[in-house]
Length: 320
Ligand code: NAD
Image (tube, rainbow, N blue to C red):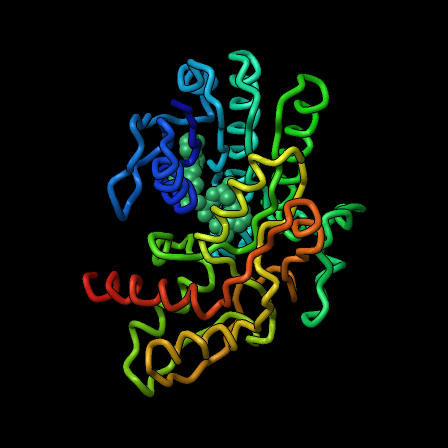
């Protein structure tokens, strides 16, 4: 039986990934500071531990896993990443995790490791035009990420690639773009735009008003969790190291995102634009390389993912 280790197993993507790996017949160990918040973990073994501690990492990687997925990070949406208040923790905590996990894997002769980087590595200067952002994988340098979160991801990408070159590890580096779906953060200060807007709209009566940060014309694309996992597993089992974008190329403005959620909710609420932490002006996933290398790219329309996510958040709001 194949064995997998999922770091960040109590988080949004990690907990969904474990369900997929269990369906494929893997024996799975998860590790995180906490258990998943919204459903019981399906991991065979779940270690509650702090991956900033090298001792915990060595004891978690105590056998030859066939696949390791490193998703643990101190992260959140714009309200967490772009205020500047969490910069030291974001950089220190996530870098420590990556340094320790790579070292533990290398010492235990575990070779096959996936690293979840982010679209936040791309330079700010290529994302100023909301209609035409540039996120081709080879446009990363000269580097100018828009946040310390992006700089840490860039450092760690380079760290993984150095272990690939120097220690022959089968590293896979993916850059996720705004992943969303049920059972993700929705009201803890780490939620991202789709969850935050679903919550705000679910909380209002028809005819009410919601607040949106910025002028609402900033653009993004959003990837539904099932497609994120599909891309992750296809890439992990390919012969290629990356880095590669795993994201949607259906770009919408934040106001358009809100309109789509209103349609699903069957409500019309007005939008009041207020100042807030924003990040780059425009961003979407450039999927040319993923398609060329894997013969696959995400195809689900945004509205389909929202149809699955909104009812879950509406339920959470009702039971608050
Ligand atoms: P998440 O915050 O839900 O999950 C991350 C998990 O890491 C959390 O459960 C957290 O408790 C755990 N963690 C943090 N510090 C830890 C520590 N010291 N020891 C052990 N566990 C620790 O985030 P997610 O949305 O599931 O994202 C997973 C990965 O994908 C992250 O690395 C993130 O940076 C990356 N990513 C996500 C997105 C997205 O849109 N969700 C986009 C780009 C990149």
